[in-house]
Length: 438
Image (cartoon, rainbow, N blue to C red; front, side, top):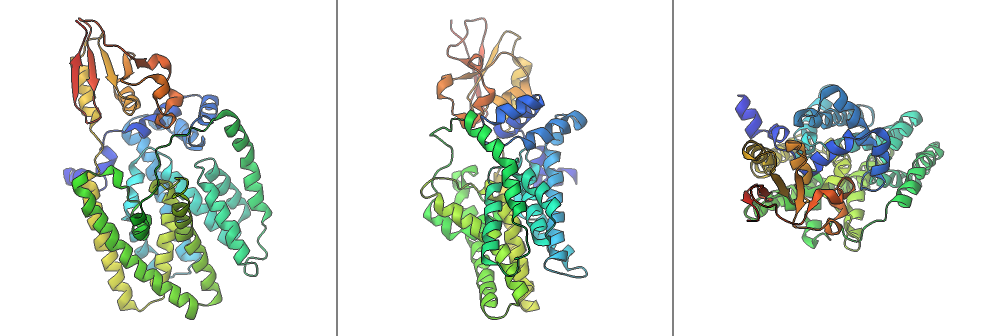
C-alpha cells in the first residue's frame, strides 16, 4: 500500500531527490535573518518565504520531507481559502463546497505542494488577499497583500487587478477604501527601492517567449500549470494533447459563463464573475501577451491564478443544468487524473541523491567532486563536502538565475587535480566519471 502511494500518486513528488531551486531554498534559509534580507535583494525573489523556512527548519529539521512539508501546509491553507470563497462569496450551502473542493485537491498544481519553494505560500496569500478584498476586511487584506508582496513579485499583478476591478465596479464597490490598497503598495515600496539599489538586473534570463500555440491551450495551462520543458521529448505530445482536451472543455464552460453573464446573471453574480475572470483569466492573458515582447510567462509564477480560474469554473457550473454540470465535472476529473498519471510517470527529477551518496561512499577524503552550476546546490545539500566545485564554466559565466548570489569564486575549479587525488565529475543526467591529471 505504501509503495503504491509513494510511486503511483502525487506523494511520489514528496520523496523525490531535491533539485537546484529546492536546495537553494535550504541554503538561503540557513543564513541569518539579516543575511537573508540582504542576499535576496540580489536575487529574484523577496525574502519572506526564506525567513519563514528559516524558522521552520529550526523546529522541524532540514530533511527533504521537512522542508517540503511547509509547502504542504500552505497548499491546504489555499484549499481552505477556496472553501471560504465557495461558502461566503458564491454562497453555496450544505455539502456542495466540500464536493467542489475535490477539484482543487486533485488539480495538477498539487505538484508544488511537494516542492520546497514559495509557490503554494504565494497562492495562499494571493487567494487570501482576494478574499479579504471581497469581504472588505481591511486588516486581513493588509496582512495578506503585504505578505504576498514580500513572497513573490508577481503579487503586484494581484494588486493591480484589484485596482482594475474597482475601476469597472465603481458603484458596486464604491465604499471600498482604496487607501488600503495604496497603503499595501506603500509598505512594499521601500523594499523595491532597496532591491533596485542593490540589484543590477541581468540581461539574460531563463524565460523565453511563449509559442503562439501556447495561447490556444491557455486554459489548460492555467488549469494544470503545464511546463513542457520538464518532460522528455517522447511525452510532450501526450501531455500537450491532454492540455488541449482540457482547454477545449474549459473553453466551452467559459463560453457558457459568458453567455449567462450577458443574458441571465444577477448584478451580484456579474460582479463575482468579473472578479474571478480577471483573477483567473485576465492576468494570465495579459502576462502571456506581454511575454511576446518581454518574456514574463512561466506557469508556476501564475499558480495563484489557478485558484481564481477554478472558482470561475465552479461558479459557472453552478449556473447550468444539473445533468450538464455532472457531465462536465466527470470529464474534468477524468482528464485531470490522466494528466496526473502522466505527470507522475514522467515528471521525475534526476535522482542525484542516489548517485551522490554512491560517490560519497567510494571517494577518498582528498578527492574532489566537480559538478555544473545547475547541480551545485543539490550536490552541496547531499554531500556537505568542502571539496565540491563547479567545473566547466568560469565564475563570470555563471548566470545570476542559477543562484549565483550564494556562489563564490572559490567554488569554481578550472583544472583537474593531480593523481593520486581524483575528481568525480557529475553530469546533469546523473552519470559520473572519475578523472585526474597524470
